[in-house]
Amino acid sequence: MPPEDDHHITVHLEKLLAERGLTLTELADRVGVTIVNLSILKNGRARAIRFSTLSALCRELDCQPGDLLHHG
Image (cartoon, rainbow, N blue to C red; front, top):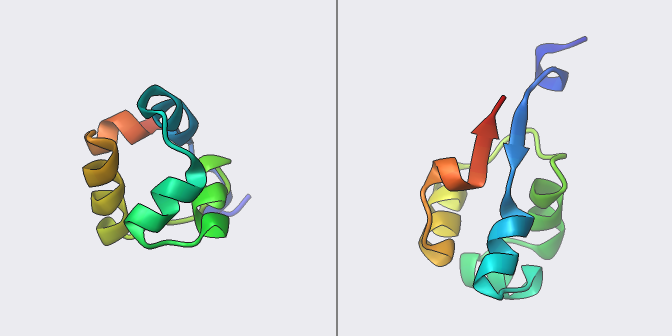
């Protein structure tokens, strides 16, 4: 299995959205990414995330990267 298929990163975007009362559409508009790309991240299918996108997500969700991503 290629290394990129063997990652153990969990994304907690759905939980953070629910806690903050935001929809995926609202967050996508605020962050400046497409709903499709945000959905790919939310569903754990993303292969990478730009630091600028991660920073914007953390800003809008008022969280730290570790609140959004978990390794294990």
